[in-house]
Length: 176
Image 1 (cartoon, rainbow, N blue to C red):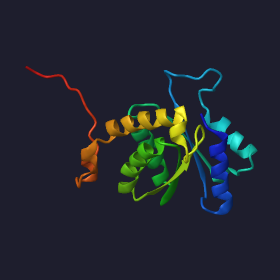
Image 2: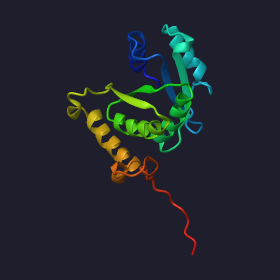
Image 3: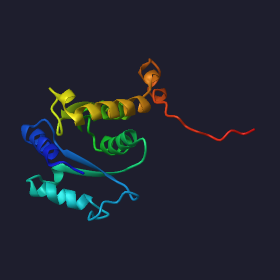
Image 4: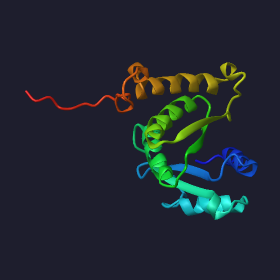
């Protein structure tokens, strides 16, 4: 789902000269198909963005698979596409506490490609100055913290080579 408020922030980046292109990323899952969505949602999004006043050269719509770990696989798909276009910096617009995990994943993939990732936080269901008084804020803090620990365990912050920093559990059958 693409939030209109997020798109408007991206449009403001374009109009202020802080960005040259708006990259909209959406997840497409064959197993979790959304009723009423076309199988190829990209042209629908592109048209909606043009209807908001953007020109074709200002828009890049990327479909990414919904494969776990989602944040890391999304970052791989998006940044491999962006690195071929000559982009050196990208503003990562994320919602609330999800930003930490997405930023880790995008920087993890972007650094070897020479891409600088700049975070921009968006608070939609709660405010950043009183998230602790909102059930969504507290719930998201715990949920995203657990996901962050699972995606990048503490050893990920050590001085190891970047290729060794992510340690996801892999189960392999034992031979006896």
